[in-house]
Image (cartoon, rainbow, N blue to C red; front, side, top):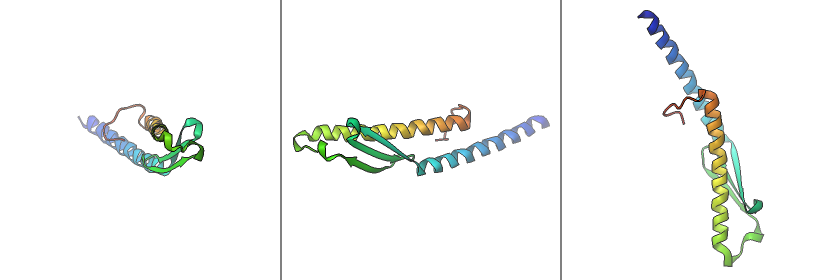
Length: 107
């Protein structure tokens, strides 16, 4: 019985270390930027790893009042692309830290 309590203590220490690494990863990702592109780069959106939009750039050539819907679609696509990149990076880094365990509350 005493041996299993020691194992539990070791497991708790490992979990605490993992949680600390996850917190550090979240802080690191929040500082990183991811750029999504659409329309061959005519529209670019930049987001942080915390999934906050920080910048939208639009080439003047795609600004046509008669095609506002196309421009809206390009902006949406660029934002989705940037968010996808941020999510994929976060997931890959989380896998590396947790060894692939799907731990609730760890992202």
